[in-house]
Length: 290
Image (cartoon, rainbow, N blue to C red):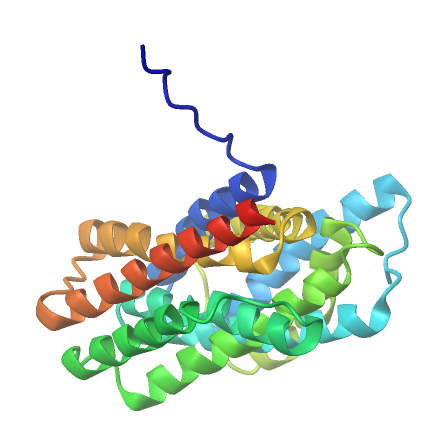
């Protein structure tokens, strides 16, 4: 009699990453709904709201607000702030699914940075998956006239800087708590983006304030979940799963904002997702063999 197949339980790190994907997608939908607001104002509102929650949590825990591994915390904060600003700007001007799939090249950039700075190794054939993912992005660009070279460049810049922020997060895993790492981003972004947004401030209705509050809370929970994932797992294993946020963004933006992605642009998104799935499976096989 054949034994029933057994399945390895999903790791806590992967669970946190998937939670982060859902929370980030929900926050990005609210950003899209608030596209009438200037980008600096959106980034400031998200940062200020999240910073209040972070500061209260750190105060109650008795942890130092300025953290421990300050060099990497500052790098994480600055790179994250610029990455978020670029990402929010692309969300406002191109379809959410396209903006998401471009920015979600950050897991590949993260793995590449981990190889460069941490000496992590991957199997040679996974480079083909990386190439396919970038090729898929170019297909999206080539067949969606709403995605200009300017916004493609902003998206790629956001993805690269987000990868730097993720690398800094990994560097802080032994010295600072997940909320402490997240706090630095908001502590840096709030005064800088607040000063900028004061020059372009757009009046807000009560419903817009509620949506802004939702962006702050959902983004904070997503950041903490992702930081926990990076504390628990290697970047090569969990970061590729961020790509599944593109599926959620595609479906929800189509349903809520009538942002249709058809033809070859949709094929390009499919290539990216297929490449990431293959890369994730390859990464799990490598870990299992260790």
